[in-house]
Length: 257
Ligand code: NAD
Image (cartoon, rainbow, N blue to C red; front, top):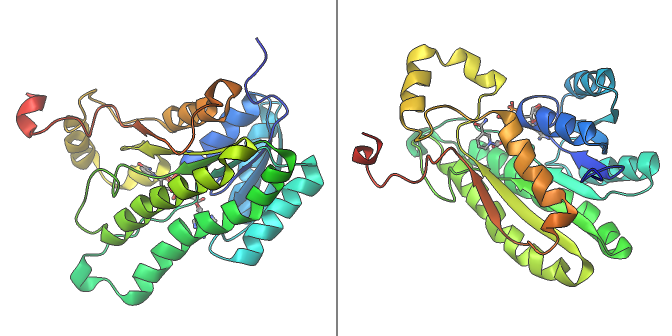
């Protein structure tokens, strides 16, 4: 079978660690040529080293997605290395916690700048080229938090993750005639490096709230992205795919007994 993203030029933001790193590795393992982009260049380089160890093709790039010039330069770099950008995975995101009473305007603005304006800048930087080549796949890492659920301390984060879906639906219409699709994956609780610090009791309680009984792995998000990037998903645009082990299904705790 022909690999789904074989030779496709792919840009992944926030790919220096966590879910983004795994998306970059999974796409590269499927034959994609990947621009591994992150605010932290050393982290991006470490991801590239892992991809190269696995025999894949990747290039590291430093970019702050909240800066328009960085987003444009990042797409320019992918073009000059690979000749085109076929797939953009806008994954970079931050999730600082602050209750509304303690949240400063600066904290609100920072979360919106990275998570929401960053998506706008990355999509704006690449979509004209996808329109010109009459093909492209844009994938967003949203979250269940915001679009489907809430969590105290994440009002700004939830607003940014829900906001990107509003952006996505209009963007999907603007590019539908150009064979450019834009879809979002909504992860639940995914086991990333950041979770090492939360402790076993917190993890046990989190697992107890998930019908499937365990946290997701970054690969679960990457595989959903891989499908949405594939030729087989050509007729899907403006949609969301929830990857949460059933976490958003129970109408009450009784459903988990
Ligand atoms: P992470 O903190 O492990 O990795 C995020 C990466 O993004 C880091 O390498 C960081 O350097 C980079 N980054 C931060 N700000 C940036 C900026 N301004 N420009 C470019 N890169 C920047 O996070 P993660 O858990 O892998 O999360 C990745 C995405 O998945 C985020 O959008 C997050 O909101 C979303 N998400 C995560 C989970 C989860 O359980 N981990 C659940 C739902 C959604």
